[in-house]
Image (cartoon, rainbow, N blue to C red):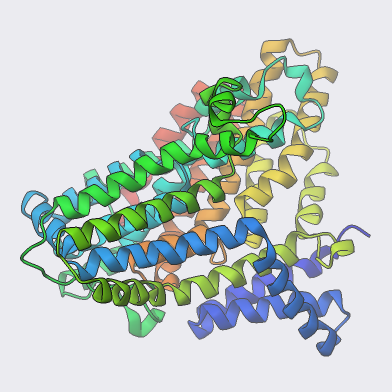
Length: 535
């Protein structure tokens, strides 16, 4: 048995239902995890609780998870330092004088999201932390900040060919059956895939359109109305605000005290991504020094083969150390007060870190095979497509919807890549060969279908309450997690509907140009119609 069938839907659906009913993300996720282990253990509560304990230990024993956990905690301490030294307040005052409106602060958030493209975790937390004081001063609701941060963070990571997501997509694609028939290298394949990402580009166009036309609707429009009354977030209705670090005033601080550490953090990430690969290449026998490692690979290979969790952790530690010394040297704060600020910043991350562990846990039990103590939900859902014998022109839209469902239910876009790309690649290439397609036509239909997988995975990640990027975006923006989920859901679904229809027409006509025309037309229609009918 490779899956538990429809029973695998119970944990994510239960967690989602409880999240909206109880307004408690921690309780909801824990119940979801427990229900999953109870299905695996045929309802035995004792064995299920033991499995939950072992699952938590397994999650925290994973090197990737531990590094991301530490990165988030230290980034919380870093933000605490920025806040308690007065650096963030000074930057906020300086920027607020130039960014007079919520529209201008939202546009700057969008630009930051495009610039910080290296990793979605880093982008979500860093952009939110930078823009939160400015957004607060211009009266932008925290929910809108979280939406702008989250949307740009995930969308840009699959478009710019230097990110941790790109490495994942390329590595999974190149190992999939049928890839060799495309006659492309992994990098060439990814570069060709970029213009087919209708959902990712749709997200960016929609965010920009929302800012330019002020076209908010639904729950987000109500959040804007509350913000006009001075209520930037609804803690009473949606629960506690994660990472709500207070930014104090300090007459000695200036905007550069905020800008310099942030530039250093961004630059250190760009340096450590390739450097991490080079350090790992030093094996003491064939390669004995960093100089040899540097000459043994291209810079692009160093970026592609890096471990993002290692690079991010190195970057935050390096930046944290420099910033700590810099602030002491600037006499913005004493060493004792600095440590207190760091401690408070880390404490502010505890709710988010708890939710992150639970999100990893429920994602693991949902997507793992029964032989590994999981439910195999992804295999079950993807099998519905494989056994459906869909025509080629329908495949892209069906794959998009199923990928979105898997990603939404499991809370992981990367897990969806790992499940769907190896399944879709051999299907579409085999269909191409059976229909006597030429190489160019085969590449085109493969790009369409794999882009549908990527787009669906991003949609599910954007909309899912149990996605780690949802949690981290809420954390960076200082927005209650459930408020972020409730306000962004209509936007994500709107973009997804436009993308699904566009992929359908792309498949019918075999032309991405048709898909682009359809996508842009539908998104523009949504921006002008929905604000008038959904208030």
